[in-house]
Amino acid sequence: MLQLGTKVVIVADQYEQNLPIGEHGYIIAYDRNADNVFDYVLRVPSANRNFLIPDEDVELEEVLIQDEVDRIEREALIDFALATHNEELFKRIMNGGNEAEPELENTAKEPLSPADFIRQVNLKAWI
Image (tube, rainbow, N blue to C red):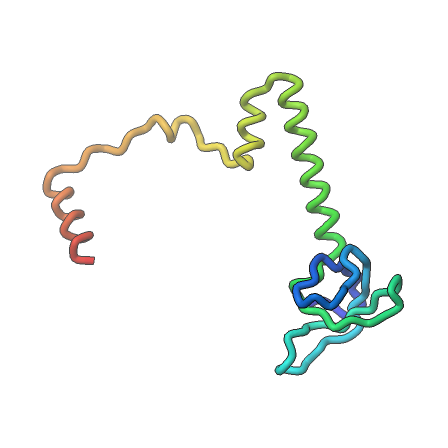
């Protein structure tokens, strides 16, 4: 639950209420009715109205700004990697920064003894 008075941005309109998507608003109350799908009462100053709104339709302004910063940073790194022909950096960025260690890729598993192999097959067959 978001705090009262929190500045949020409307990011969706899943119940087609003609919400002003992209506008800033402030949470002014919680909707505690159990029979209702709405979570908050949102005041949108630019529309000069209050809206009942579910939690999925709003996002904190700070989260949206951070997402945009991350996207711009990633695009700048991709441009830099392409401009400098840095293939390693480009692959790391495109893989999300989760590059496996090269030493782990080259190491093979030790072969199992026949008894261990049969034990594993029987265990999997039992399950």
